[in-house]
Image 1 (cartoon, rainbow, N blue to C red):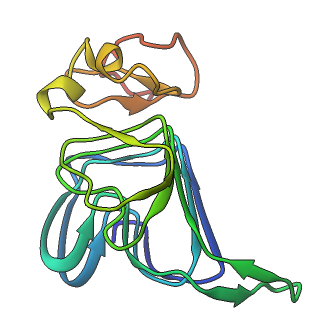
Image 2 (image 1 turned 135 degrees about the vertical axis):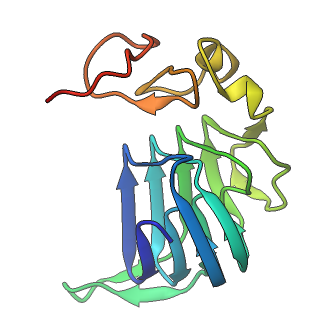
Length: 168
């Protein structure tokens, strides 16, 4: 995984992106964000477009994370679930292993998981790129267009095209 190999209790991602310049090679459970474990996973306003090779239970966001219960540091019981909101994934399912809650999310492949609530819209990789990307994914928020896939923006105008310049 690009971000978390193993997680427990609760793992949250907000406004994170693993773009197409990232290459991940796996031999086991592999995903752009979290590969393995028993956490409750909450993903909001994120994108997974990494190139992933090898592995099993491959997904753009959540790999082999299963349901169960965990005990938090304060002693409370945390029941695991997966929630994906306002996000997109390229080339792989969003969640490889379990059914999940989804809203305002997109993928380039058929999802084989069921949704406990909501849905994920399938569109082509080409429709996710360029100036029309947000027209094709109208429910995404916090993203701006580029010549490639949309990127997360912190300031500026929603839907504005990034110049490609980075602050010095």
